[in-house]
Image (tube, rainbow, N blue to C red; front, top):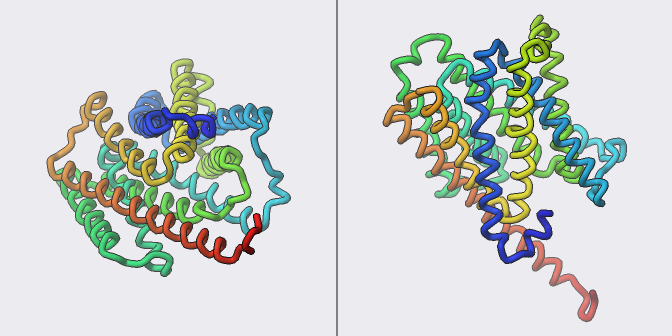
Length: 333
């Protein structure tokens, strides 16, 4: 479907719309998690159900695509290094969800999302530290903005940050950002031979299995059956898994194919805006002016880093194409 749209004159309009819908659906996670918590769920069991439903949804879509000629690979035939990278992505995907939904329980959704969106700066910092990316003026400004914004976001909630509960929530949100950083770094080229839909299903399914195992380990397994016993909870979890995991993940992938990584990455910054607005409207969570300024600084930094990274990737690809062209035999294919 995305290939047909990419070649149509309406792709420039449909692509951004697809990404904005994906970002908006991801932005629902915070308020839906709070609704589930109010009905007796805890973050750990909520993550299990969300990931499991999301994995089933992706599997259904993946099966439909394969019947229409879509690609699939046998994991046994995937190089060992790629299998290890995919396994790490599964673990990081699990810790991202566990940490951010833990944060949603303990601190305002706005604070959790703005802390989480430190991850583009963390990705850039890893690139600089490993020598994969230069510390140029754009990255320097973006990293400085991110740090200043983080200080503003946390300081803006200073009247409530004095308790251990709030500190743990902030640590959870920043831990989610760190896990997302590792996920992005390993996913850049870690398992290229695995189709995206297949990898996504494995990551969501693996997250459900790992989280369920943790629930059994800490004695919280009894809570996994709660949705079966509470008729009002099961529809909420099914909706969350499909609307906040399956659908936005696939729309996000479609958006990248239609309009590219740069515009997709920038448009995805609508996610925290939607999450903050919904928390304010539905949960009466206030955002201080200092947190607004800090959040804007973090989002601007993320946009700068996204554009800088994509420009360099495009330049590297162009240089590679020129090198290949120079090696071609005159008159050859």
